[in-house]
Length: 274
View 1 (spheres, rainbow, N blue to C red):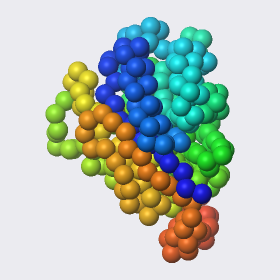
View 2 (view 1 turned 90 degrees about the vertical axis):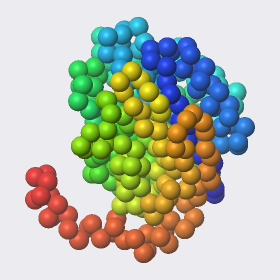
View 3 (view 1 turned 135 degrees about the vertical axis):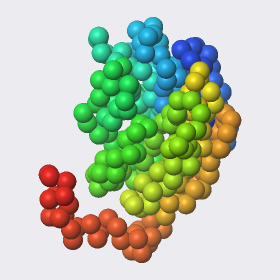
View 4 (view 1 turned 45 degrees about the vertical axis):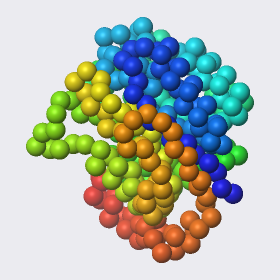
């Protein structure tokens, strides 16, 4: 069975939840118009990134206003939704991805496990992976920096994920420097995680400027062989791609990475001290 997945790219307006929800509505409607069955939007889609001083004002509970709006749209458009925003949980805050059904129901909540740098001062990390089984297939939920931890993505695949979804905001502060941290590395990262796990992967990125931050864009949908099937480089918009599990087993007979790892598990345990 082929499924249609949409990746949406946007430039969230810093701290303006209502304006960003309006943007997301437009992206969801565009995805549905293109017959997508699932739409993936970027990380912290309601607020942008640099909102540490306003967490109480821009965060929301789950369920809450944000999930009510997204749930209503998903129900109207008959489309699955995944993206992350800032969750208020008592006196704590999480960077949380929500997976919503075409009936408008919250099927899963994933609190970002791997927090980056100053994020650790803003958010409490999650402590559990999340895999969602749906009529379309089985999805492993990730947020941004999770992709930099290969054992984490491998664990999702070994536990049944057929597709990896990554809602993200890859960015840098200031101009390019000697490290040249930019979109080339993040797109390559998506391709490698897909290739080494022989799994489809979709990544939705923020794009544009946010004060001194540059948000990379270059959202993409990648095949189990690490090939970019569809993507958006710069600007806001939506791209849709048909994906199927047909042929994946055949590819895995050639790219035997998942099977071959079993020959070396004792070595890995010694290396990783587990």
